[in-house]
Length: 221
Image (cartoon, rainbow, N blue to C red; front, side, top):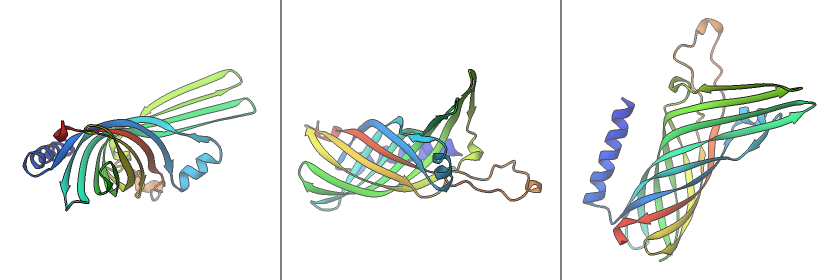
């Protein structure tokens, strides 16, 4: 069902581009990810949170709403996550979490000048895959465990808000800086949870990202 949804989104994106879009193009760049939420604060009390370096790549279309405004939906493959590490009294630990998503921002864009734009709007994430890698050592003894994140452990549709700005850096090219923050927690009750052990306590952790992207407007080349 999820593969069918992704296919329908892609086909709709291509159809809209060919019919009504004034501008269309491709984009990609680097993500600097951290997580927020009450449970992340508890982890951060013991381990330092570091930026996780990931990437995004995809396509966009732009629909004009006059000379100054436009609506720009995007479809991106996004890799993000979180990193934690710390050490004390001979004990050291690192935890790296990586997740892959289909990221769908729907942005309202305002043209400040011909070369400068600001934008904002909601985004929606469809979870694809992920993994957790934990490394621990104590007095020379090390443990390294890696485990896949199952789809029934993560909300299938995450959502949040994104805002940023873009500046023209050449013909049909823009350098873009944006920040996004999740609204709903990524955790969800597993399908095989046994209620006889008690009610499931949903963890509170949400993604956030700083992204540096380069946009290539193919309709101007």
